[in-house]
Image 1: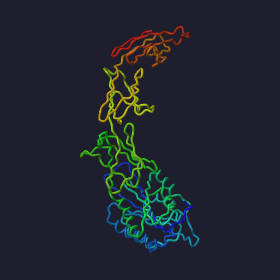
Image 2 (image 1 turned 120 degrees about the horizontal axis):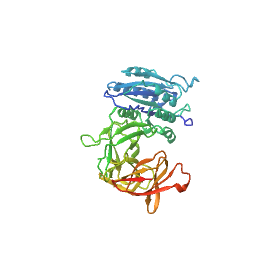
Image 3 (image 1 turned 60 degrees about the vertical axis):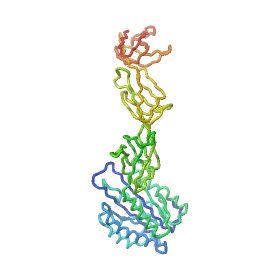
Length: 459
């Protein structure tokens, strides 16, 4: 940043700081706008045949008059570069001050301060932004905005990009709008990490953009998330949605998607100051990144989210106390969800592999989930085996499959009796007493499990 030279172009950087509450009060939300004004020496320069400082202060004073009529609004003024004179050798990189704190109806006080400002210092943008975190008194239902007006870039080796990131990580979000005349690419790149750029050619366009920023701050903005089904209709619903700040990745909003009484996806209030990453917590989750919200308008975010249902059923009586099934996307190893038996769960359409935690485990591949259809997967009713041992020992249960033994369970060494729920099939129980120190004392019993039947295995 320090290698960039200061420009004579007039730049308006509107940094919108929004502190998001986790719940919404019935009391109307208050909007608080902090104006941060550059009063450094370069503001003595000419723009459109008039001194830049005079243009900025005059238009800000006019703006104060128009803001007086807006309800639930408070304003404040921070200035930098006005207390120490560079010409007198008093350059200070901490030259910033909250001149007018937040208070109701302090518009005339701000106008009075604006009249008395004289630009003379340097440009500590990063330091000034960092200090703004202390300018907003605690408030549980406030939207906090910063609008920075400057004609140049950082002159104190600070890094506004780093400050913006630090503030966002602390729950403060920054969204700048940069407006200037004839900005070169180097200057634009210096602000790109924290802002969106606009070009203006005269004072009229500067005033127009300032009004646009205020309008975006004050006007209502609504967002509708359309979860599109396989037929192209926004019919999917009843799923949680998380909105992240796409810059800091901090969680900003959490909503449960709903279809309203008119049959449309219900609108949600999002602050237009941010770009968002959206994650819809379907199975598997879907999402969209770098979402821009157009202020003062109704925005629609559409995502393909065709879903169907998977139901796990038992043929007959379910003897398992807590039978579960691991669900994976077909051909993948990562666990997507662990679904309870006798439960119906919604999934994005496609093919899935099931691992059912019976004894022995059962595997069902390429189960297809179709739009608005319930896919039912049935497994055989189990049987019950009760194992009786003469004494404590080491006992393992194996299932026979194609003339091979597959281990499925060990009976605890301290038990002499164990009841096990098993799927139908051929099994072997292998036992050796704890006090038997020779392999020849190994005992083996074959037994059959039938659905719905109980089997006793006695050693």
